[in-house]
Amino acid sequence: MAYLGRGWNAIAYSIGGVCIFIAQLWLLDAPSTAAFGYLLISAWRLIGLLHGYRTARKMPANIVFPWYSRWYSLALIFSIVPLTLAMLVRSFLFQPFTIPSSSMLPNLRSGDYMFAQKYVYGYSRYSFPYGFGPEHRMFGHGPDRGDVVVFRGSMNPGGDFVKRVVGLPGDRIQMKSGILYLNGSAVEREPVGDLTYQSVTVHAFKETLPSGRSYTIVEQVDDARGDNTKEFIVPDGHYFVLGDNRDNSLDSRFDMGFVPDDNIYAKAALLLFNSEDKSRQASWIQ
Image 1 (cartoon, one colour):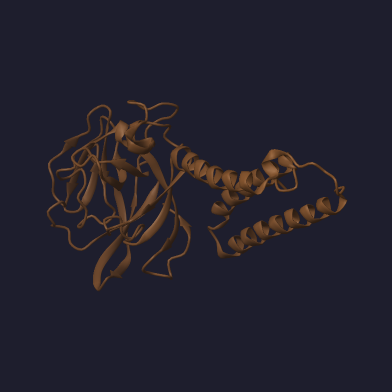
Image 2 (image 1 turned 90 degrees about the horizontal axis):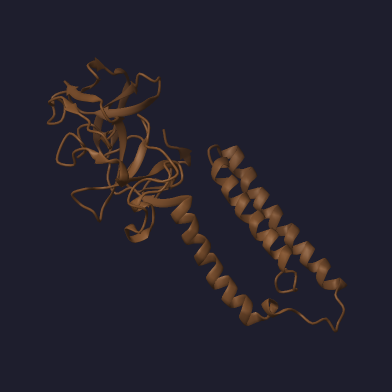
């Protein structure tokens, strides 16, 4: 439509396409609704094509087109606008990540490609590229217990980590024989079978926090290095995080320590696919 001098129509179709794309992220949760999402965006493109064809037929031969309908203007617009839009979406809404390890097994695996929500916790220093965000969190709140968060490591400022929050400021956290203790009480867990990953068999458990929120964790034994710890008291402005793969995760039990609130900048939300395992389907991250 921009080529035909219909700027507002072009903007409307662009906004509609973005809205459909965002809706498609939600529809990816089930194969049946995912197919509907692809059909919807195909229909939107067909509508735009037919609308453009009918508009072109009705135009007089001597029409003078505006500046943005010239080929060089369109080339400039379509090279700058997508890049700008991608940067805005990445900074304020969603950011893609690739999972490099199995520390969050079984919920996230090596090779997983996921989207994290940037707006859930507001915006802090690492919300924007190169650490140009505000020094302290704005327009939001910290994570809840059970959230899978993306944060910048204190000991490795250039590295991003993905772990699950289990301790809030003021909480007392301890591991005893592989069982998580929160404020002196054992967190409920029940076995849900075994899982074999990369030729290693681990035991899976459903862990349920006092709030009723549950998720799956795995471990091999109950006496690994991180299965029996001292009691940690989470200081103000910090969080205690664990990997779901309890015997294969470097987290707050070890040198990583407590995670400062301002270092947490996104919530893991949507698993898209796995570059190594094609059987992994799109799903929400629990």
